[in-house]
Length: 574
Ligand SMILES: Cc1ncc(COP(=O)(O)OP(=O)(O)O)c(N)n1
Ligand SMILES: Cc1nc(C(=O)O)sc1CCOP(=O)(O)O
Ligand SMILES: [Mg+2]
Image 1 (cartoon, rainbow, N blue to C red):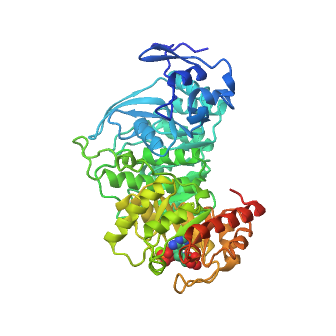
Image 2 (spheres, rainbow, N blue to C red; image 1 turned 90 degrees about the vertical axis):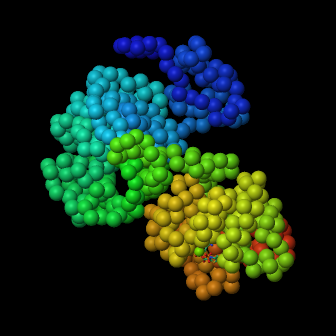
Image 3 (tube, protein in one colour; image 1 turned 120 degrees about the horizontal axis):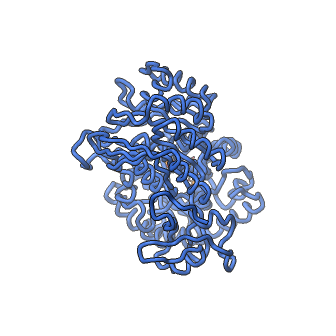
């Protein structure tokens, strides 16, 4: 039964569901999910009375709210973040930033509003707190109905509201709690009274998985401690960690004299100093809310904490960068561009997020070999895909930029129509120019962290690694996979160090990212590679075994069948 609300049309709830396929039959979806149309502009929400036709699997609570109907009558759930924060009428920060940031990273974001602010690019003109009882009511509405993965907090204007939130979280536990201890807006206006400090310190921090203060907030939480250096930030992170949260991120965006955006992450044992570029833009309003929301979205998607923080930092850097030429409002601080990825067509047809299983048979082209066999690159790529290649990398060491882009555009057409991702070796500029699916970079190429900030979160980034330390760095830099080699000696890449099957094993065991093996791999030894049977090893990358052969299709088929046989023997974790 629906609970009546105090002062509004309480019986009308809009259902938070949508078909993902434009051709999906909305009326049958609503019937299955228990939604009846009341009027053209509103829906009366009722719970589904039965799992009609077995089409609503799993937890009925989840099916009613955040589950979306997928093609073929199936269902998919979405990572779900609940933001408990204030509304920003200018939409740069607060609830509005949180919803945009989570949406951009593929998480559903529900919202409990703690305060309504009158705010713009000049500053905060007024704050109207929502009564505690009504915050409690909103929390119950969301948490009792929807399967929330992560709660993220922003502006909590009173200690009473903090207590209400803690009680709700005790009643409805979630997987993770991200606390952004918002006290002062970017314009310098106070957003929470001094009593909230004790609320954070005594009630909320002990429940938090991560707390993300900026320098001013960290200082306020620690009784005015002066924070001027990275070493001060480490001490602050430790002191805040002593207040109860499992992890602390002290954001040094405003560190005096720093030309970088350096943050300190402390997990109770280790400090990680996270470097980022400082983006020169007026549009920084909402940076803190966005960062915390991105961390929450990544946690909801299943990322481990430090990786969530790294990805969030990368996203914020890109959003700041893309905002540089945007003019909204007349004040000193405009909003960042959360939706840059939509605007830069990263979601246009063919763009895709990374699937580690695509590394299974990885074809890497070579212009010298194509010349030798009298083939153009497009025919070579086409043949490798026909034979079963699951991902293609254009490794054109000699091509001039213009020819490289032209070849990449032609190969992209083939790859897109076969749903095979196409990556570019070394050249981030070429990848950008043709909107390829990503890049592969080595230890002396552009650092993956920089490539990620240029390409954004959706593109695939692979990094060559020969050691466990390089694999760790690739992960921290936001890469998607690593290429490990040379597994065997090769003549394709000059002066390449051979790490052997043992070296491959060490890297795979240390890596948090999926791994593709490379170097001297052919039909004669591919089986022995897959049979080392270590987690994370997802496939082999080959150059000469495909492109230095008379028939690429035949060789690709042969390799694929060997890989399939050996990986089923080795029971690869997929
Ligand atoms: C899948 C894959 N793994 C490793 C490499 C090698 O990259 P790098 O070390 O940058 O060397 P070059 O290929 O640029 O010579 C790769 N290309 N692909
Ligand atoms: C491009 C490349 N990278 C390597 C690495 O060890 O990182 S080995 C290599 C060449 C692989 O060519 P082939 O399959 O012909 O041996
Ligand atoms: Mg390279």
